[in-house]
Amino acid sequence: TGMGVVIVANKFTGVYAATCENEAAARHSRSINNSNILAMGGLVTTVDDAVKIVDAWLDQEFCAKPGAEADWWSPEVEAFLSSKFPEIDSIEQDSRGR
Image (tube, rainbow, N blue to C red; front, side):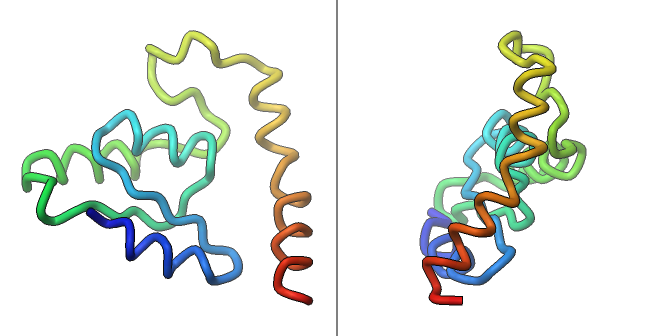
């Protein structure tokens, strides 16, 4: 399913891994979560779907609207996303006793 890969990968500082089962999830994982590792389930993802998912993931930028269907996207969403990672990094460091 790709879940195990993500669980292990996310234990490392600076890693934002996401399991994506479709193109929308891939776009959202990049635009909202700034994922830098993509995982897919080899038993549940066809080769054709995997190519589409990877293309969507690679084409998507962080803090950019994840497709035309994201009518909820706004400048306020972008402002929140662009400022959240310093706080997340601080929480991550504290949780690891650093």
